[in-house]
Image (cartoon, rainbow over all chains, first blue to last red; front, side):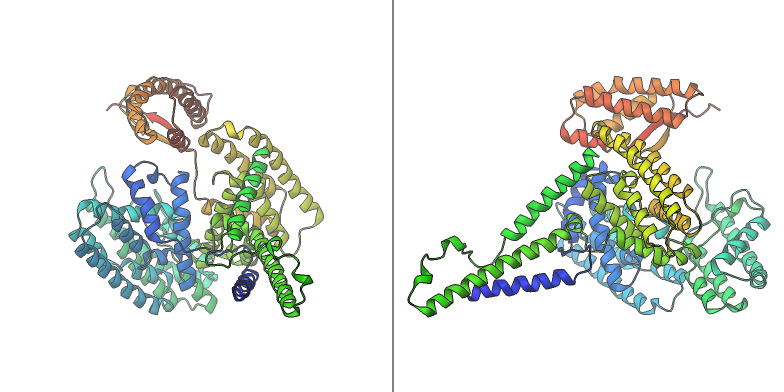
Length: 295
Length: 342
């Protein structure tokens, strides 16, 4: 009887939990990256379908991977991209994949990798602590600076096969991202336009995003002009490094720094309302990729 | 429709099996004592204490069975999500409420990097994955399925305030019904198609569905479906049917290069690889003719050639199940171009 009563109590408790759960959710053991890694490593060794995002076998691995990242994001109140950059995101998957190799890197190297991931964890915690005070562009800037210890450990201490596996994890994340623009502030290309036209277009689009009135829009224009001139200089720098067959990209960090500077000027000089200020802080566009052609 | 029903039936069977496993597998649980195995004639016993104990045992056993049935029933009602193993809420009605609640904000600022918009995209993608699994469809096919975009659009329209007037609603239902008939026609032929072929069929169907819906709506309802469309495109995890032009030195070069690369991706044996070459020679010849034919839209013509070539490979290369799976995953339309000589 006691065993029967215990079973009844267990079922009652299970039923209560089921009924309390929001519709459309079920209990499920969290997918472990170790399990996912065991499927990814042979897939990358086969070197065929795993590179195809549209392959349903790839998607069958991407779905659970995104689910884990998404749960982390929801738990921490951050975006998917941020979760991926954290110590439990792509870095954790990469290390799990290296551990699943045959043979894996030796124990000393695995220890170094875990130490580097722990370092990333500290950096990420500091980031989370100040995240609320940062605009979205400032958040991107901070995230770009994370994880140098880990990439150093990968570049310097690992056999080629293991460092390849690390980058495979990164590529897998690239395939998994729901859309490119979730990963990085966008650029708005303006090929073949005059400089003045480019600045007018950007003034219009920034004004719309922030919700500026006509007077504020007038005050915005010189800020856009200044930003565009600085971006044009970055284009010149990139041109110097380019070859006929390869267009050297603009420096991402420089580009973001310029846009952050512009947003600070907007906040200081255009008398924004609370709602406009919020829209400005949410702005994440970094235009200027093709400004080279605007003269 | 047959296929969809097949998908449902398969899903129901799977759910049934899972439920049976869940109900039957009780690690560390008590030994089951079927009612029939209870000692017979105990009620006639002269021992009232023993009778009471037996009654209590029967009551407890009955309670246990009722609880098991109820737990199984609640789990069954949640089995759609269980099939996809998704812990994040993903149901059409939940997403419809989310979109209608956020519509004004989304229309004001649709930047996908905003957390609220990212959240909608990720939830929509989770829903697509769930529906694909439940319906036994490819991720590319969910949009055109009556259970996909159409059903979701209907829930979005239901969730909108103010409610749609009856006339507009009837027009929207007409567009959905037209799309449903088109889907049924496709579903009847679907099993014979490669994935590329399926994708090539469902993409225009999806476009016609969305256009039909949008043409029937205006104002806020139009904005809602237009927003749903744009979120759908962002959330869609796969897009089979990409058209890729390879730069080659000559048509022969294209046939040789593709023989190598397709043999690798399909994991063909050396004998199969030899048999593939003439198929690709013919494909490249037909592509060359297509380039000269200005009456045919090039990518559409190439799509048809590619599908025909895939069927020829299936018919002649004696592919193993794994190789067939690799062929089904070949969702790019291959074309070539020869750069002009300087």
